Image 1: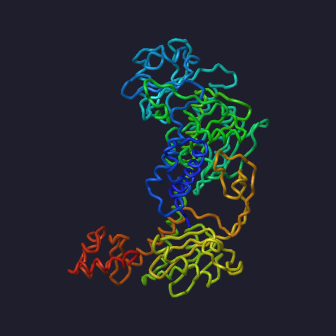
Image 2 (image 1 turned 180 degrees about the vertical axis):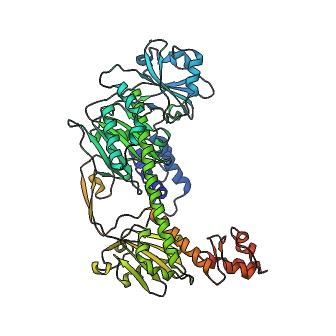
Amino acid sequence: MVVSAELEMKKQACKDALLHSIYSRSAGDEKDGDQNRLPFYQWSTTKEASEEQDYGALELLARNINQPGMTLDAGVVLSIGLESGVIEAASPNTLRYLGMELDEVLGAPPASVFACTREEFQAAMDNSERAVPATYSMKMAKSGKVADVSFCRSENGTVIDIEEVQESSEFDLAEAASIAADAEETVAQFERKEELFKWIVNTIQHISHFDRVKLYMFHPDQHGEVLEEALKPDSKVESCNGLHYPATDIPQRARDLFLLNHIRFINDTFQTQLKLAVIDDLNPSNIYLTSSCLRGVHPVHMEYLQNMKVTASLTFAVIIKGKLWGLIACHHGGGPLLVPRRVRTECWTIAQAFNTRLSEMLREEQDKRARQVAETQERLLALLGEDARATQLARGLDLLCSVVESNGVALVEKEGRVYKSGTVPSDPVIRNIWTHTKHQIEREGVYAIDSITKQLELSASREEMGGAAGVLVVKVSPGCYVMWFREEIVHEVRWGADDNKNGTPNLFGARESFNQWVQEVSGECRRWCANDCADAQKLAMAIDDRIISLSKSAEFVTDANGCILRWNAAMVEMCGLKAELAVGKKLPEVCFYTDQQEVEAWLPSFRHGR
């Protein structure tokens, strides 16, 4: 059955929380007082699981994956109190970067750290409401060093990231800025996604000097796939192009952070992270650094990268329609790699141009498909004729097949008659499918599965299946159903994780093995997607509308709550109430019977149709 991406994300978040709960307990992260609490892996599989427990486990994961109070040792982090307006927390490396002792920094006004006017400092502070904050070149008051500085809002106030400006011949900032300036014009020239994918990984690698840059896409079931890769000839990390990875490799809560902070940089995966020093009795664990580029990294992710032989990483979010479509992930294997902040910013500008062009391409594909479906739908509706019978669609089975991308189609009547064309099972198997799916269709309007024999547990021979593997079913009118079939596709899926073979992730830390595993997939079709189901439902509604409008009988349609959706001409003639006055109201509001209790008793019979 096709499951929405939103539901898959919620399911995956629960799996992530399970692993994190077990990991936390094994590492002794939880307080002794929490040890009696029912573990997530027990209650998550019981019917008695409460929403409060569910929320608690997910909140624990959301909190810890953000590593509040911890920073990377690639610069200085300052936290300015929302009410106090002074530096309430700082990373303990201030002397090295600022030339100031930690005691001098804590409790001081933030402007005192910089050699600039109060007005200049306030202007930078005011420009902090961005997912990727602007970068300013500012001189340190005590050391005289020039640093790249950014200001970003947090739950606690304002966070300031300070990174030393590097004079390095390895990175060409001028070239990076030039490429970024032309990025929108460059991506506009690409007509094929494959060309765009190759360009983005090669361009980011050229500028950032990482060993490997990959474009990683999330599938609807939340597992990931590497679509394209740029790999240096002398790379210390291995190729992963075309590999698939389990959904738990990138937890949902980590993905959520990419929607808040679009860039993640780790200069050294083997470094010792720093704990914030604070004034008075503040708790460092209550200071969130979500928007900081120097925020701490969860130890499991550090371990994961180390096991992958990655020594530094840089990741950019690919966001389409407000959702995380995928990631541009850069990995290095030759030791730490400190990419200057301004180079990272130019890379993000390029990534934004990529995101925009990819979004346009996906929208163009959808629009083209929508126009094709609309044209086909009109031709099918014309076949219904004046007698308004859905079985008239049997005259246009080839047209019907093209509404949803499929290899075969069948029109099935409740009485058992079957009209079919293309790659379809035998009539008895089709009737059996209808028997197994009709109740689901009545509840949800559409039903789609990728493997008829596996998911419906039908015992049918290959000859009886006729080459078909998956089916999508909708009800187009009372007693009439359309089934689209897709043929079996025998293929291999290359996983970059051999522990995915038995479906058992590492419960006590990061995955240790990245050995490839080839999964043989058979008995399944190409997966149905949400757009397939939407196209099928649009057709079903259009047919039902046409049949009702042409029907000589007085007919109307309600939704599951008894609210009137359609009210045909015969109903208008019979009860004298125009359609525009009936649609949107509930039956008791427009019914001409005076016994309202009797009307209410009818509603269950209208719940799934007329």
